[in-house]
Image (cartoon, rainbow, N blue to C red; front, side):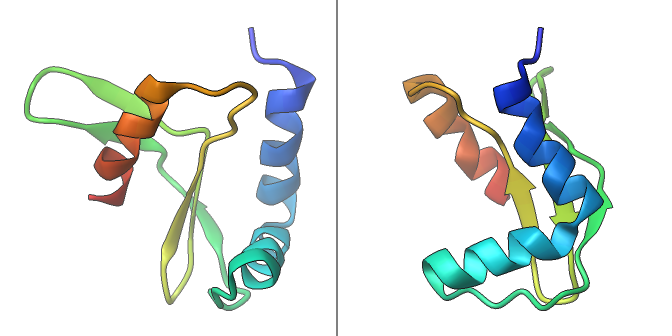
Length: 85
């Protein structure tokens, strides 16, 4: 069952996508603009597997996959190339 700790950042970014743009700009110097909109968060591979991200926001410059991590996970780190594809 999702926890508040997991769901709160997603709620914030869904309700105010510009907040994610501000975080990425301040933390990494990445400027995505202010026109992010939510997109489908399901990803598939050729093998019968499906992955669903917590949140996907798309803007005119880039797309951002938000995957809230409440604990370290080596397996989840291996899934990031799938989201990047």
